[in-house]
Image (tube, rainbow, N blue to C red; front, side, top):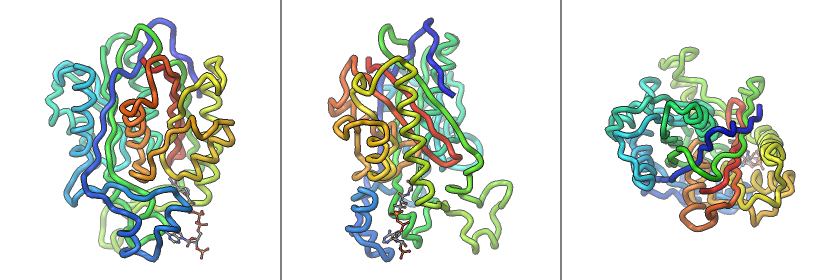
Length: 333
Ligand SMILES: CC(C)(COP(=O)(O)OP(=O)(O)OC[C@H]1O[C@@H](n2cnc3c(N)ncnc32)[C@H](O)[C@@H]1OP(=O)(O)O)[C@@H](O)C(=O)NCCC(=O)NCCS
């Protein structure tokens, strides 16, 4: 479903933040862990290294510094925050939400807090959700965090998945803007393809048991090549749709920030959406696929490196398990 925001109140991104754990795992390191090579990983994915949290690190531990940075840059004290939404696939625990745990660590005592489960599209879903709350006028500001400790759910003996993912967190603060802001959104899902990427164990269907551990049900499972094709089509369609529905053309967009899954997916999306690669932001070589954190980490780096400037139109586009996909078109303000 696509939607243009109402003309009453424009909502924009006021600031961004990010945090990745210090430990770097290179492709060369992975060569010592599974039957793979730097050449294979680089040529098939574009990933050179990823950041990995130390054992015992929770998703909220990564979310906190990203959230603090975004709030500081926005000049908003934690106690003045109205809404906190975290997108994650790897919460600290099934409940309470990561958002409530971050709230406690931040001291954001006035915020309403909940999580969004939309896998790698989570930060797009969370931005669109926050926008709806803010447009209503009852909430003045919102902190959106995308945070993951995927290393706890990756099977480090499975070369087909363990080379792809990394840990990290990105954040942004949303609020009213006088000009620019979010000018288009697009979201979609297809539950019929939920079997392409999932983690069966640990929920109500397969609660933890000796058997579930023996069967390795607590690791993510993926049909990589099937996902690849759907990811390209869904992200290209969503990006094109959000641009067209705002009455714009690809030429009117300064930068597209795609979910950083695989350089071949990103390049194929650019081709299908008629986008030159110069307009596509890529940092997956440094971080791998950080799922719900990916778009927000990339947005932060794009803003901090000057790749986007006030007035530029930017498309965030993502795709993930569910299946889910979505886009946000915004004018940087
Ligand atoms: C996973 C992915 C990189 C695999 O690339 P691919 O070109 O499709 O490769 P294939 O799965 O066809 O595997 C080709 C061969 O490489 C092997 N291979 C897989 N992983 C390997 C690795 N890390 N190192 C070396 N060889 C590997 C396979 O076993 C296979 O060998 P075989 O031909 O002898 O059976 C790719 O499918 C992909 O990126 N898919 C999308 C994944 C994704 O982004 N998921 C998250 C979505 S949000």
